[in-house]
Length: 178
Image (cartoon, rainbow, N blue to C red; front, side, top):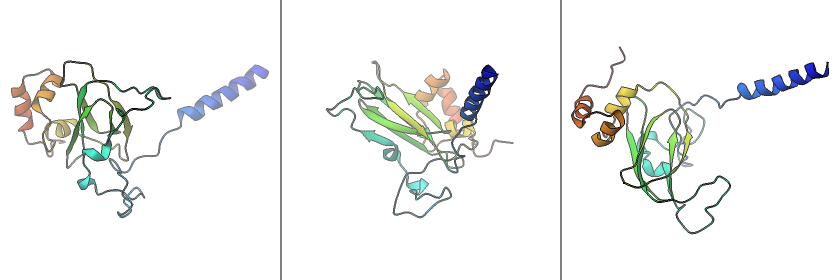
């Protein structure tokens, strides 16, 4: 009887973990702006069209201090070109070049990339967050972003010639869901 009770308790504990999740996001991201109006998610957010890469960026982990912290983040060398594309219909590219000690936040559910343009190892600390996991047509977001993602980065990512990427970026990507 005792082992059956133990199994029920353990099953209950595991089940509560399995069903736990964040609430469904309502928009791609919410950059706090106390001077703005309340948006669909009930928070005061910066107008999404006025958001730029600096809203997702922090430079300062390369400053002297304790870099042997609880999360194990350490300042390293190298450079990363990072970015993400907002969801349809804008497909706006938000990107930044990161150096040692920089941090960039990628919203959950959005197409994102990291590329090391150098010849040495590079490490960045990234966090993911979002308010809208909605459907993103990957082809529209990757090849129809505004501005365009560098064709050299996409050529390496898809392991094709730059001419293929240029061809794809010049296609009509607004509504190919049909």
